[in-house]
Amino acid sequence: MNSAQWFERAKQVIPGGVNSPVRAFNGVGGTPVYFKSGKGAKVQTEDGTELVDFCGSWGPLILGHARDEVVEAVAKAAADGLSFGANTAKEAEFAELICTLVPEIEMVRLVSSGTEAVMTAIRLARGYTGRNKILKFDGCYHGHTDYMLVASGSGLLTGGISSSAGVSPAATAEVFVAPYNDLAAVQEILKTSGHEIAAVIVEPIAGNMGLVEPAAGFLEGLRAATAECGALLIFDEVINGFRLGPTTFGHMCGIKADITTLGKIIGGGMPIGAIGGSTKIMSCLSPLGPVYQAGTLSGNPVAVAAGMKTIELLRDENPYPCMAELGKQLAEGINRIAAEKGLDLHCARRDGMFTPFFRKAPVRNLADAKACDTKAHARYFHHMLDAGFYTPPSAFEVAFISAAHTEEHIDAFLEAFGKM
Ligand SMILES: Cc1ncc(COP(=O)(O)O)c(C=O)c1O
Image 1 (cartoon, protein in one colour):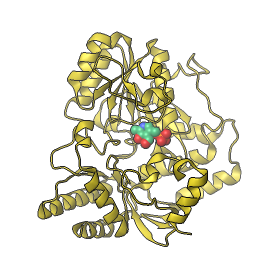
Image 2 (cartoon, protein in one colour; image 1 turned 90 degrees about the vertical axis):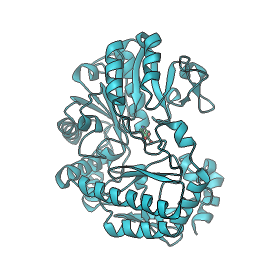
Image 3 (cartoon, protein in one colour; image 1 turned 30 degrees about the vertical axis):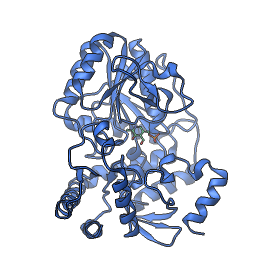
């Protein structure tokens, strides 16, 4: 059976045939690809094709698919027991490792997904401050809890509106939404409502409207403004964490968030999430404090084994300069070819993360990202897929270069792109 046949079969028993909506290819059209196996930078599909993967499971696979040492760690952990719902030594060691590599994190609680990490971070911020309201940014994604599925409403100073059916307006009314990179908008909201706001949550480098970097002074401004009004600053580093170095982006740029959320890479491909912060704030979590949080599979030994081995390899092998160099070659190549061909696009890049935006003008926020030509992106996606390269099947996502990619992969990608 090929991908099309599997998709038809899956649609009978799984809503839309998928377990996460972006996999349905609605953003690019066509039939979703069914993956069979992966090794290093490549995946094999149910269609009998081989693809160079620049999606990396949306971020976790920074070492590439099925890295031997990670698979061995998982196999050993699985053989020792899949889950205990009780404490293991590995959890303590993993928490120590995270706290050592991210000195701003003095304590860390493990959960099972990025969504759950953010959910806990928000509750923790509310419990710690005794306030209810939250400020987030349009275009930043923080998982699918009710109060994070919110888009900007009629005005800056009113709460947002839900971006999904089934979300109670009461949940989103407590959430202000500002344009990303717009510090003046944040300051305006904080001026009137700062005393009610528990936390400002942001992806320090945005990755869910395509790759959008923080403007100079934006994160520093958030830090100062939140400190002034007594709100906590949450850096959602589910994508950023361990992506640019063996630590958080917050640590690398010297801006100390009050709470950091992690996921993706710290699970090495297994389901995980984490919330970290100072001992003072983290002590509010139960059983030490009054903010409840729990999980049958939290700190699952197999996930911890995969995450710990991944982080150790990143720390010991430091593939970051190499991934950054490959990212540079790729983005510069795309921009050069686009200029030669007169294509209306530019490639945003930060180290090994990149997004080809189908417009020339820079993208600083969601409004800019939405102004891109999504049809041109869909043509690019399918052209590259036909040529053997899997990129994110949405114009509003970031692509990843892993430690398993080589110059040959980048050269081949550019050669194929040049034929678009
Ligand atoms: C920044 C950010 N936060 C949170 C999440 C939610 O993580 P998960 O999909 O593991 O629930 C994502 C997922 O893409 C994300 O990019």
